[in-house]
Image (cartoon, rainbow, N blue to C red):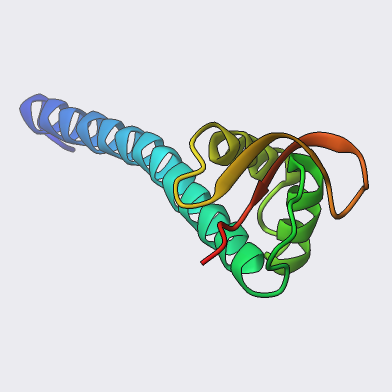
Length: 116
């Protein structure tokens, strides 16, 4: 039989480890968001600088291109959220508020690579 003092220490240690696991799960979720954003941002930049140089694409067409290039483990909703972030802060890419999308041929806000 386990003494009461040891069982309370064991319970406290168990609770502490479960809290640590809960924190690490929250940290993992936050950590997963950043790599996905970075991955999509780099992928879009590479596509617009190489395969689709000189073309401008709307968000939905870029999501389709990204999904074709990425693994199926990334849900479409996560890629769409990330694409919204890329459109809000395009970085080295060029944002055009109204332009003819090379994919769907609709006039929409688009991203493209700047000319060298």
